[in-house]
Length: 83
Picture 1 (cartoon, rainbow, N blue to C red):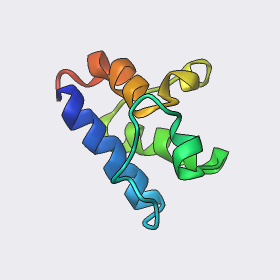
Picture 2: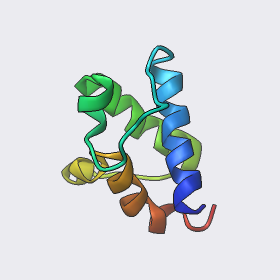
Picture 3: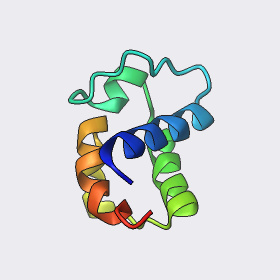
Picture 4: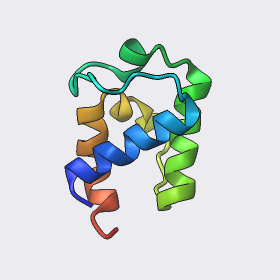
């Protein structure tokens, strides 16, 4: 998967978790939790969906690397390159 595909996968997961979220104007460099008012459970759901849908393991110590859409793409790129 390339970065655009990864970004879309993250957005799709967010929309599944919170259908009312407005992802149309996301700023890639701004924290997702700030832009979408995600709580810690929503964030954990995103991590769980990444594992379930794509087989990607994200250690708890690296959760901070998933803060923004841009950082998600950067972190997940190598882990999802084979997809």
